[in-house]
Image (cartoon, rainbow, N blue to C red; front, side, top):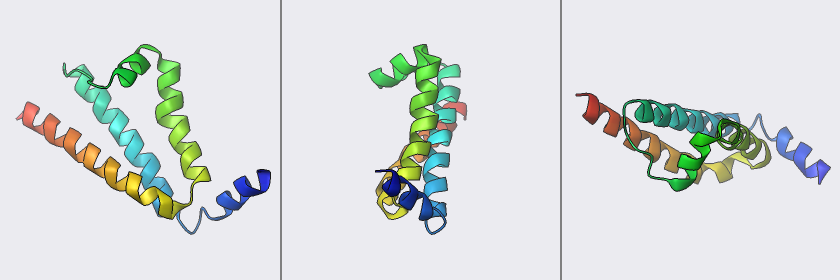
Length: 101
C-alpha cells in the first residue's frame, strides 16, 4: 500500500498539469459558490448546504480531499473530472455574470 502511494507521487511530474488543474478547478468552484451565496443565491445541493454549516467539514471536503485525490490518482484518470469541473465552473460563471449584468 505504501509503495503504491509513493509510486503515484512519483508520477506527479508527468501529470502535474492535470493534477494542478483538478485542484485549482475545485478551489475556483468553491470560491464561485461562496460568492454566489454571498450575493443571495441558494445552494441546491443538500450535502453542500450541510457543509457550509460546518466549516471544518467544508475545508476537508473541498480542499484536502481534492489534494489527496490528485496525489493518489494518475493524471490521465483525472481528465474526465477536469472536464466536468470546467463545465461546472463555466456554468457558475455564466449564472453570476447574468445576475450581475
